[in-house]
Length: 97
Image (cartoon, rainbow, N blue to C red; front, side):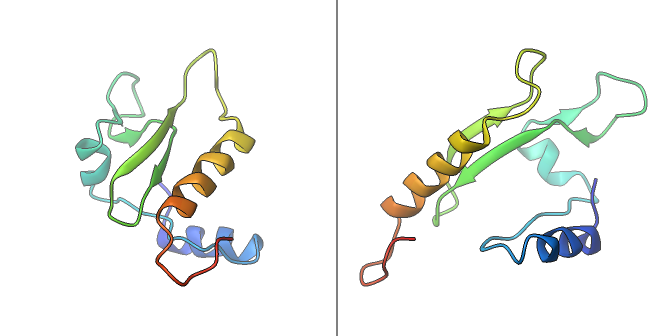
């Protein structure tokens, strides 16, 4: 589980991010979202590798979860889904990005 400080450093390396990265030291979110790993010794309580696209109201609109067949997400698809949700949830008067 990454710390708040490692997330800040990661975001800075990318020139900033328009969203927050989450650190979950108490493992509450991994349990709530059903992505807690308890299947491999040494990984108990760690999160599975998952990508969520969440809209402004907090609703999960799209999910990708790591599998043997797909160990990494299709990053172009992740961006396309995020842009789609962002465009649908744009407050009136704000231009789409």
